[in-house]
Image (tube, rainbow, N blue to C red; front, side, top):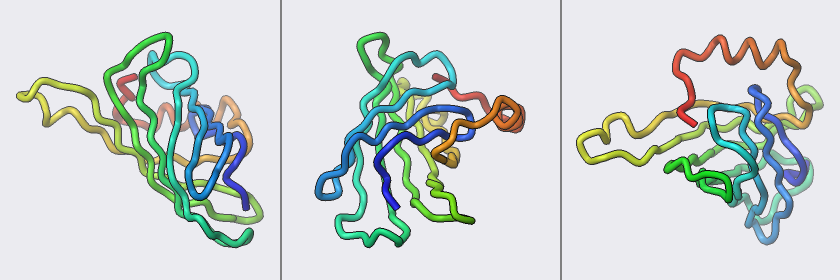
Length: 139
């Protein structure tokens, strides 16, 4: 299994892992959620010495600041690449922290879960997941 390439989560957001060098991940992220526009730099880590057929742990971060806008927040994901029924899948929890004033720190962090696959989800899959979320993403 190889982490490099294009991945899509259940809402259609796109993660592009351009390269992995000695465990260092470099890429870009484009979200379909909220008001964030364009590509955002992605950086992360994975295990250095993984055999081609093993599961892999992975973690990455996106700072929501690019040439178009600064959303004053950061998201980190932590998960693993697995092969499930012949398909490569990344299951990852995310934590998004929004800049707040000290009195509002209690509402500065959201936690969620994403499943990334190599194929773009259909509109019906995206709608199903959008409608099942009780909290909207702040971006």
